Length: 243
Image (cartoon, rainbow, N blue to C red; front, side):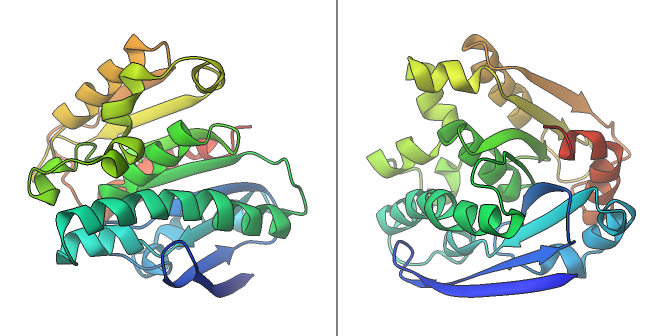
């Protein structure tokens, strides 16, 4: 039921792992937190939480290494290098990970739901907004959507292309029309280490462009922790399986 693929990504110029749990069902790509690998969600019992849906053949869960997030977290190279890598990571997801998922699902047109927590929420939202032809909705938990503070306050064209918070205000035409047929769920606790203001700021940008979204607060008893995200994913399981 579990399968692992690993290949050298020419875009990232390093190896990338993609793990799948399940044998059939709706595909969901869950991004790790900042520096997590493809098996992080298994170690933190997310796969167990979704186990009933996986075993029933209703859900196929995928996850890939968070290589750009790891570079940001560890301060790899210069800020410009890390911004370049963030852009390349999103291109890798679209041009390498998506085809691998579609091949595994034996469908070249199947839409994929994204999900993630913290920086994983940023990645889930970013690939949906940039590639709405491949992704149908995003379940974003405890998200951090403005990465400039993690990049030394610097900015570049690569970061602009990779950051929905910055480019969506200027998005027009067919890409925006397609994105308006998608959906973004922005959910967050308000307990320790949480900042729901990030979700409200992102929702404002989405709303101004007519992109369907919803913010849900889980209140002060839910911190920025894995047990919060496990409960969120189970609560929003119907969103994970939505067409």
